[in-house]
Image 1 (spheres, rainbow, N blue to C red):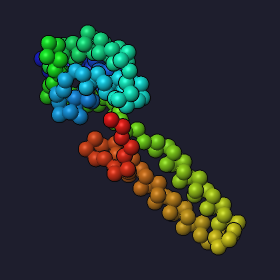
Image 2 (tube, one colour):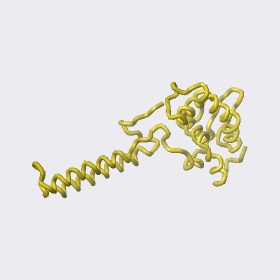
Image 3 (cartoon, rainbow, N blue to C red):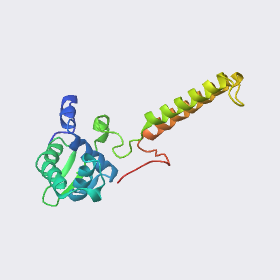
Image 4 (cartoon, rainbow, N blue to C red):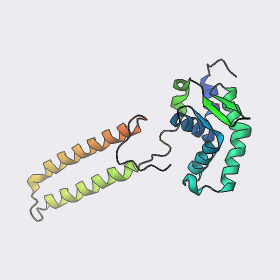
Length: 178
């Protein structure tokens, strides 16, 4: 166990593995402590892009063995978790501000922001072209207003994307899988 001060090289080494990052993320979401079984199921679900109910026995077994034999002891050796292999209990030690930058953000909450931005662009381009050719009730005088509206919409999307990336703020239209 270390004295709690990890070098940047040690942090890179510890968090170079996705299972270790996912373990710490899971612990953070469960108030710093959990049993091994639910952790194994969730990590296996994340790795196989599925739900915990659909994780197979083989998938669980692979994750269990590597967490039990390799990853949890390494996290404990570096003073990140307290791991009790007999009780199958893991607790996150209170030094998370040190390693927070090395963790994956929002493992479960990956919104396709690029599709939102692309949709706004396509709609804006179509409206601008129609307004430019004065199709229907659209006139070329509307083009500046269309451009302004698109800029405001992109700004709102950018603010929503930034806000949703903050761990304490969740958008109401989140598509979460647990």
